[in-house]
Length: 475
Ligand code: TYD
Ligand code: MG
Image (cartoon, rainbow, N blue to C red; front, side, top):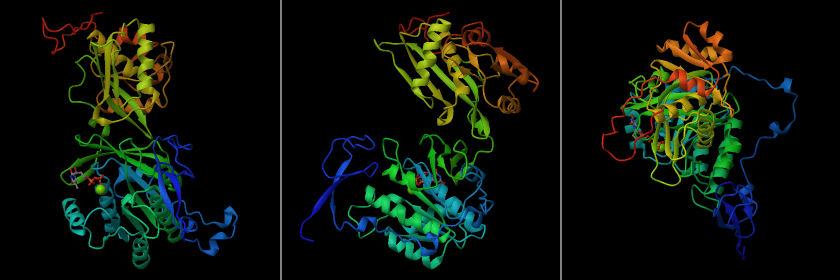
């Protein structure tokens, strides 16, 4: 090969272009096109060939669909997010920030599977065998027959897997794996894609459940993400605040189950443990009493979760006040603030508004709208939300409170956790009352503010008399 041909490859989505471009025409990412040498045009396409038998079309009925062939993992939270267990022959990507606990989770899952009599191969490209052993020791007595391989070459991994014939294979991480015959170092989009495809072929052909660990870049995506997300059967994200101990496992894509399921774990001295009662975990110990706090019942997949929200409204030193929210969509917050301004008459225009969800959880379900609006109103007026009250309802632009899905499930969970009162949409009041909870039927946000906030304003501790001008107006 005399002449070197080059091409430009987007490191986000894998789009190939003949010339340099500032912005990828496919995924719109800026400065993501990287020049690569085209070594032999045929090579990048060469992938693990599927066997001839698979190329014969069959009718659906001829295919033995063993839908119950899932392996239950004793880690129920993990099992549930996967859709009820591990499907043989599936390829699952587990993404998350560095240090969040991906290796820990998968090593624990691998150990559980091995302890249950499955043949499991754990491949680490990031750590030495001693490091993995140390971690395993920390997590408890490692099962005798969990196989470990520290390797970064795809061919070597596949060869080893062919030899030991595992039922499950963990690759930690896909970014450290490379094919020697391809251009680009480990982690480049070509390598990530080709290694992903190689493992996909292996998973489907050998009927092995393959788990890939993928690191998330600063902008929140798995490096070379789009290329992987398309080919895998499920994408799970392990999330949480690094300095808090709760970890939430969530499915962003799942060909074998719902994407709304959520698994809650706690990182402790001996790895991740399941949180048996996540609702209790996301409620702070001080139940109510302080302005700006509200408890909502959010529906996360098949189960309701009680979560505490906090809002802080304070007069802004800036011409453009700040609106910062963590764990709740910023645009949705803007809508709720506009509703509070126009329909309730709260003058929030010169105030900074901060909203945060307890435990590093992210809420994106309309049923929590009313809780957010109420928390903001509560902080603004320095009037706490009535004690032991759980709030549910979607807020419309007109300021009405709309129905929520599966209200009884939410109310039951609240009762179970000792909440005496539930604020619910007017149209669902009867349904809620029949469940034995004191029901406050609210028609609109204004109504909710009048009936759910304590009549008396309390002094915030920080508001030292004679302090700065950051005093909040009283209603
Ligand atoms: P790790 O699984 O290595 O993260 P990732 O693979 O996502 O990069 O987890 C690393 C963090 O977890 C590290 O900060 C230490 C902490 N940890 C514990 O707190 N307890 C434990 O038992 C283990 C194994 C790790
Ligand atoms: Mg790791």
